[in-house]
Amino acid sequence: MTYEIQKTDAEWRAELSPEEYHVLREAGTERPFVGEYTDTRTVGVYSCRACGAELFSSETKFDSHCGWPSYYAPLAEGRVEYIEDTSLGMRRVEVRCARCGGHLGHVFEGEGYSTPTDQRYCINSISLTLKPAE
Ligand SMILES: [Zn+2]
Image (cartoon, rainbow, N blue to C red):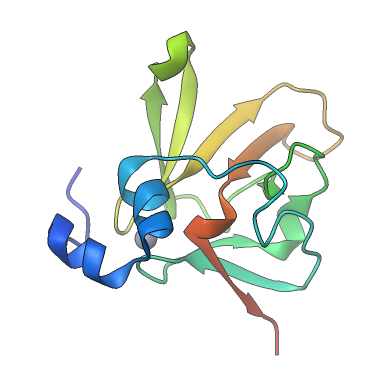
């Protein structure tokens, strides 16, 4: 896939903190329960910390108790892309920003959460920036 925003590794390293680079560009995972948006209930829009694309709304954020910000849907289809991830010996679906390819987290489904989609977009806080509603 060709992304609208394309930068070299050196450019991303210059723009992102080492922690942001590790998650967004190297598909790292922040530790559970430490991310700044894990329990946030502020109304607003969460955008990609790397490129600013709007990705998730506070309206679909729910309390999953999993330790990471969780959403039951993206802001709109096409904002994120899905990539099969078989690392760690299991099949998971990686979620990336469709505009820059930044790693966001994974999506799981059928876990029994009482949300409209029964999906859990398990997203790293450090991949996002919350813009509170005016
Ligand atoms: Zn992005």
